[in-house]
Every structure is written in structure tokens, then in C-alpha cells.
Image (cartoon, rainbow over the protein chains, first blue to last red):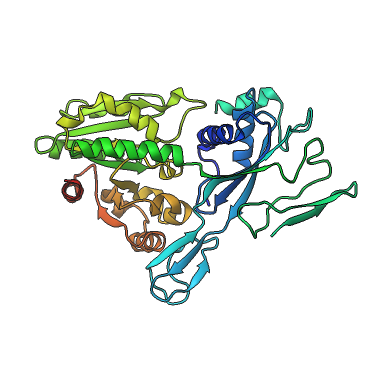
Length: 141
Length: 262
């Protein structure tokens, strides 16, 4: 839920992910990092995956990839109890009774849920990988 | 509930250990996708929020502010919406009344800090361009690093001027007590719908550049309806940082936030 062309904070978020993964992996090789991203988080999955390649490059986590599971935004009306998906238009009034007293019950997740351990395939290039030169160029913009 | 899938080589297995239980993943496993490593039991449950690290530091910052009786306000906006001009007006009005510190986030320069010098406020500049690729927001560790450069015990109010950006700053708690956003009517009335996370995160929206209203085709009621759709609870103050219209009301809002903290 964010417009394109904005500066990205996914790089710094990948730094936080790396800290979490490193702690839980405890030295074991990691192949896949499963991340939940709620619809109301301004995290673009493709950007997160790309930034992970930059951040993990040259570290023990190089070759691992991030698998993003999107979580739709849902809200519950405090007045009538109606539960609905927020959908594409970010209107947070109850779809049923129109009350503006509604709480978001999902869609704000941003969490490392689990890790798949095991070495990444030997010499494998993760999806969407680009040659090193282009990757470095991307990091400075 | 497990997740069963079959590979092109005819082998099949299920993943029965996903912590979040019954849900589907938005990806497919292509052929050869995970040849070369074992699947199945080698999954470690983590369930850790990625903002935890930031939020712990934010809580520590908030504790530092509270220990000195300081109210901290995170001020956010697009580039050019008028944060720095509003801060100048604020300092002019309040410098004799409250002891104010400014934490100034700027990607490369000290230009904004230079514009705020000379009003008797303590100013701590954070240049965010030193990080990996430059940051587009202030996070809690950056604000924490600026705190030793402010004598908090000599302050009442800290105004944190975030990096001009409608996306990233909304995601990061920096330890503030309240969030205010400067929105300029030159930005168009649809912005709350395009940047709902930012507009939802704010306690106050300052609708700035109201002196330009006669010259713009700006639909103020339409904007307010869009804002209400995404954030029914936000306070709204119409201001012109240039003419000073509404700035007294903003100062009153700041006094009320300080009273809440003390």
C-alpha cells in the first residue's frame, strides 16, 4: 500500500532482518527466510528481496532468499462488530454501519516467522539477482 | 495444516511445521527451486517482529525524554511542505516561554539547521546520508545518538524534524510522545488515500499554505473527507507558516501535549 518511486527504507529493514536471522540461525546455514508483510506496512516485497541480496552479500547469509507472505488488512467495527477486508481503498469506516470507530485487526504484521535451514544450492543465483556491478549501483541511489 | 507439494522429479513431501498454521503462501516452488538442500524438519520458528530492535530503542528514548520531563513531537511531511518555516515561526513565538530543542534530520546538508539558528533553541543535526545508501527517515537509534547533544534537563519540548518523505518516517517510532504532520495544500487533496499509513500515524495534521487557497483549485472539504476516511481521530489545524495564520493554535496544541507528559 504505497506509491512507487519513493526512497526506500527496505535497506535498513534488511539490516534488522539480518540481526534476527543471525541470532536464530546460530551459525547454521540458512536457505530461506520467511517474512510476513501486512498490507498496511509500506514494504514492497520485490524491493525487500532485492535489498536482501545487497545486505547479505559477503556475509554468512549470502545466497539465502526472503520469501514474503502478504497479509491483507482487515478491520472490525467497534459499533456493530462487522469484520471486513480494507481492500485497495484505504477507507477505515465500517462497510456495514458506517461507524468510524473501527479497529485494524490484521495487516500491520512485519515479522520473521521462520527460517529454512540448509545450504543454498551451490552456485545458485536467487530469483531477480543482478550482476554485482548493477547491484552496487543500486545501493547508492 | 500441512503444505503438500510435488516436484517435477516425482518426489513429494509436506511441510507440517509452519508456525502460522493454516494459510497459503504467495509463491510457487519452481522445478529445481530447492534442489541442493533439505526441506521438511529443518525449519526454525522465529516469530520476531522486525521493528523490535527499533522499538526497544524508541522506548529507551521515550524514557530519556520522560526522565527530564520533556515532551517530544515527531514532525513529518513531504519535502517542501513547510516544516522548517513552521518551526521558525514556532520558535519565534515560544522561545521565551518554553525551552525548546530541535532534532533535525536532513539527508545531506545543514541548511535547515542553519535556518533555525539564532532563536535560542538547542539544535542537534542528524545527517542521514552517512548510512548505506542514505536513509530516508529517522529511526530510533539515530534519534538516540542525537540525545547526548541536547541538554534534556534544560528543555521542555523537543521537536524532531524528520526527513521530508511521506512513506518511510511513518514506519519508525523514534520515541516521540506525539506525531504531527505538515501537509501543504499544494500537494493535492488525494494524498491521504495515497499515503494512508503516514496519515493514519499522525495525532495532528497541520494543513499548511492556507494563504494560497484563493489561488489554487484545492478542495479543502474533499481533502478533509479523505483524511477522515483514513484517520478519523486526527486533529486538524489550518495554518500558514508564511503569514502566521493558525500558528498560535499549533503552539497551543504543543502546550497541551507537554501538559500531558508532565
